[in-house]
Image: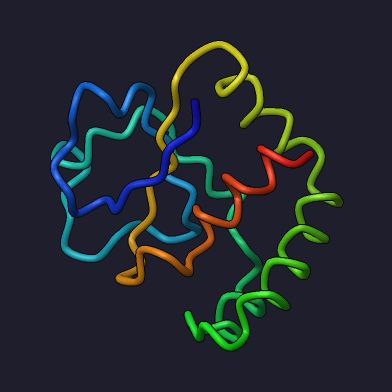
Length: 114
């Protein structure tokens, strides 16, 4: 099972293996408090795509399409992520404020549909 969760929310046992999927470390959070098993920064969106999207729900459909394209070209990062998701419950950790429109939600959808 793949879940998503904001890094600033308290870790729980249901999280399973916690993977940070952002390109930058979350502001104001010590690494010890994050309870992250793996920081897979190479799976994050490109800087250009992240800035263009800006968590604007109006751009969500196009963002997903563009991010999926990036993921199709990022074979090694997707394979590494699948090496975790294929054998255990995983929570994709993100730092965005928006819980519905962020790269982790998009990434979870990509994994479920590809």
